[in-house]
Length: 259
Image 1 (cartoon, rainbow, N blue to C red):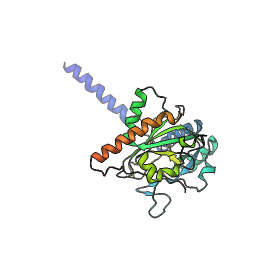
Image 2 (image 1 turned 90 degrees about the vertical axis):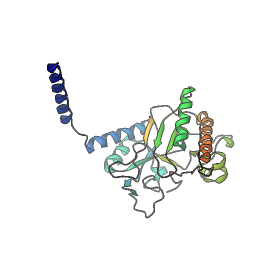
Image 3 (image 1 turned 60 degrees about the vertical axis):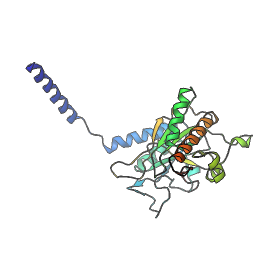
Image 4 (image 1 turned 120 degrees about the vertical axis):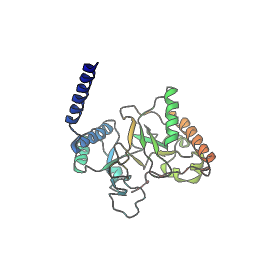
């Protein structure tokens, strides 16, 4: 028995020594992972453009009181600048190693943006029902309103039946917010951050936007997801109202419409 314990301790010691010898991740490793993630998004056909990045709890744009720190593009021409060109994205990623990236919606894809709790409930239901769900990302909380879940879909463009589509600007109107509580449809003229975007916070542990389902998944028709997402958002709003939050959820505008 004593010999067995000795052998075990010897194995444990060798394992500890091996762990200590393992190479630590470097900034270059993190940079390579970031570049791979961005190129995977571009390979899926989603156009990218550079965005601001966090500096502690502030924004790299140095604008006093920036309303969306680290969540906006750096150029006013982000819509025309957005591209899927691999060489250009590699140059941006290497020349701007701290930059976040946005993807412009309404060209190839739209994004249905919902409160995190509602999104998790909707995703579980959609997968259980066998509905084809495309890429999905989580954006952590930027304040008391909580985080968001982003469902990437094919773009609706401008359907013949305009009742099936609304521009992003309407997501900020009270009547639309009441009809679709907590839901934002990013389409023409809007954008969202893509992983591995970092958000303001502790310098040692910036919260980050992350994929739940990666960009390799085909983009579904948004109408296949919309009813379930609306239902989940309505339930979420009702639960928050029952908890004494005033009956209307905080509608967190994660990204401005223009920059």
